[in-house]
Amino acid sequence: MANEISGTRDGLKTLLENISGLRVYDHRPDSVNELPAAFVEFAGRGEGLTLGGSSFVGRLTVIVLLPKAKPGDGYDDLTKYLDPLGTQSIEAQLDSDSTWGGSVDDGRVREFGNLRTLEIGGGRYVAADFRCEFVKQVSS
Image 1 (cartoon, rainbow, N blue to C red):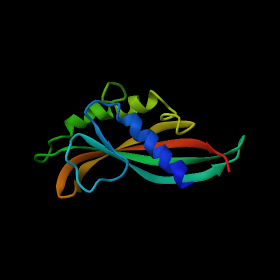
Image 2 (image 1 turned 180 degrees about the horizontal axis):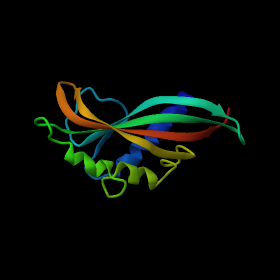
Image 3 (image 1 turned 30 degrees about the vertical axis):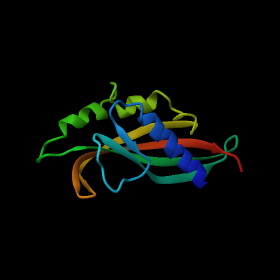
Image 4 (image 1 turned 180 degrees about the vertical axis):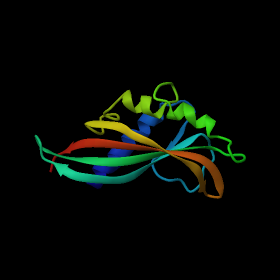
C-alpha cells in the first residue's frame, strides 16, 4: 500500500506544480527558501471499498505557505489560492484533472481553511490547509 499512497502524493504534487511560481514539496520541508510554497502530507485513509474491485479512500492535506512580515501580512495574498477559480487556485488546478495525473480514480478538495501562522525551520509563514480526498482502485 505504501507505493499506492506515495504515487498518489506524487501525482498531486505534480499537478500543483502547474501553478506558476508555486514551489511544491511532497513532504514537510526542513526549511523553506522559495515562496510561495506548498507541501503535501498524507492525512489518513478510510475503509476499503469492494464495489467492482478493491479500492480505498485516502486523505491528503496541501499546506500553502506565504511570507509573513508582520501580523496581518500575507492573509490577503492567500485568497488567490483559496478562490475556486483562477490561475493560482488550488481547487481549480485539482479540478482540472480529477485523476491527479492518473494516480487516483477521483480526487477533490473537500474543504479548506485553518488560516494561521506556521513555523518551519526558524521561518514564520502564513499558512492555509486544503484537505483533499481521493478514491483509488487497487489490485492485490
